[in-house]
Image (tube, rainbow, N blue to C red; front, side, top):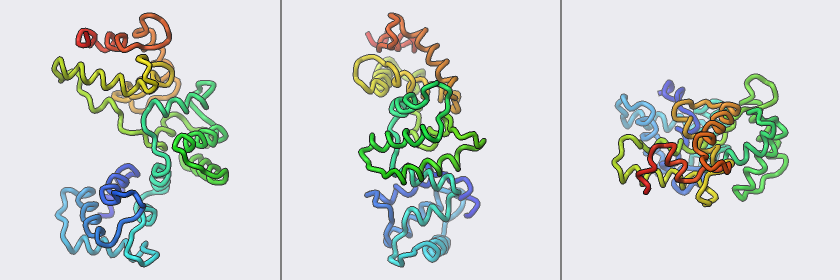
Length: 273
């Protein structure tokens, strides 16, 4: 069972945890623990037959080590400390406080701080970035806490120790939702399904509800679209592809992409009329 934990990351851990911590209070009570450990073992080792003895043994192992309050409750931090490596453990706790809803919101904040379009932000810029992020979530975070988050992020994710993080580092830290476009299979759909799906796609990225994609909305769409084939897109690559998309799709050259312009680019215009 231990080897199964090697492949467990913050996202997988959170998925298992949230299955049981439905009210998101950060702990699972005694009556749910057997089901929790049974579910975790089946999820991590689906090919292995899970017996009641194995469930109790795993439960006892974790509870004896981490039920520090001896109240029969298991805290998410207690379990994460034991199972996850340092970076994934940090991601888990941070994401519970500041999950990111979509690529458009992410790109709005990124553009604000990557002023020179280098594809990197410094530790100082990161701290300001985090302050904005928490304000967007209506959360008050002290300056000391922001400093702690900033220092921890730089320590864990600045692999080459150059004092900066790139676009992909931050996307991973903030746990962007699964690529929105993955749920659509445009080529496999019939006429009406393609029309419906295209409308859903456009409305998802048209966060401002103006009927046109502009600024960070275009960035978010490009990031997700290219993420289907190139998951680790850098900042400069995103800028280049954004320019290509605008050149091809922005027919009236107003710096925005209207719904009919995007439909034409995607080859679905006739489906919308």
